[in-house]
Length: 85
Image 1 (cartoon, one colour):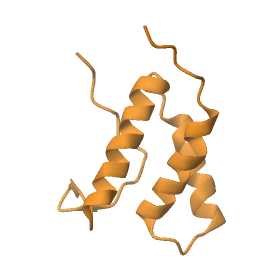
Image 2: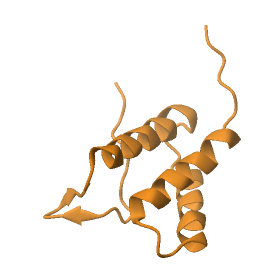
Image 3: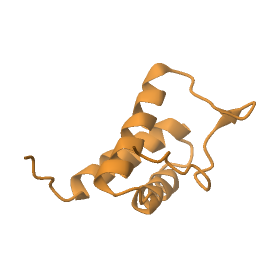
């Protein structure tokens, strides 16, 4: 059984307390990032958070979920390769 991804401190867009997605692709990017954080980073969200900070700083006017995508794209190539059984 896996534990839920801790979301505190990520400052995610919300409406009425629920995560706010304006398009289906945004929730897919969120789920992909959550999977990478859990499986490749052992639940450590700090590397992704740092990439997100960089992505937002690089283009402050870019929509939030596009920055999220840019952060994920920057993070994935830096991950150690996983061996398959």
